[in-house]
Length: 179
View: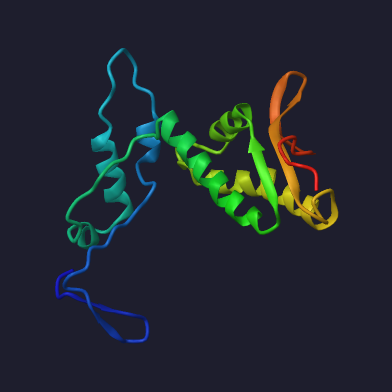
């Protein structure tokens, strides 16, 4: 920033001389997702620069030191995002003595349906909320997991041979020793 200071909406100034600001935007994401014609990959960086020019005033753009363009996430990274969300969910369920066992087909379905080339992995949280957290909350509050927790198998729900969601099923832990 020019003078190394930031003023908030109440008029208070903060020292910004040694601050790095990282901004993110989806401006230009549409041009990145466009398929090129032919066998070579097309460079859409000029399209992205034009999109930034349309979106931001020159005064703002001139204060940016650099622009980094990200490409679509590879499948392995999307699978890691699924694992991250499942690990976080399991940590929340540990207090309730609920153990999730998510099969590979369910993980693959979440990776496919929780990722969007334009929006990235942001939709994953909504998918986890809708297809795992809400049903689990019902089971913990009013269902089979209400009294003592349990094990929940998560797999793909199919209708007419097509994967349409997830199914959650409480099962007995075969490895547990009887009390």
